[in-house]
Length: 161
Image: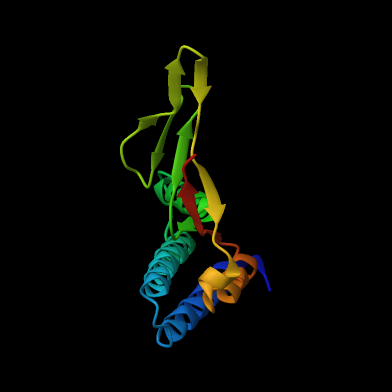
């Protein structure tokens, strides 16, 4: 397959995986797993929208002169965004080591420093991946998405202490 067809192929792969997730959701009865299916489907829809934007920009560049280079600049930005795209299903942890702060799921920043007469302690929470047993039938689908579409998927929860 030539490079010209890469994003068309990527669009088909992502759409196929989204359909698989939606079909798998119909047999799910657990509320937590239903939520994971919805978040994964939504994340794949975002990736599909970006791929569609990339193909539209490629089509624009092929058919129209890009005097100011704006379309090429936008295309480059969309491609970089897609390369870094990641779907977070459970928790997202950000740590700022310079200020010793962390936040979970985009919430408020919290200090990881604690000081008392025994000294200073820095205690950040950590992420623990969900097991295949917790993910049920969604686990093999997510592995296939990671390998087949190259989309990163984070399926971890924050653990304190």
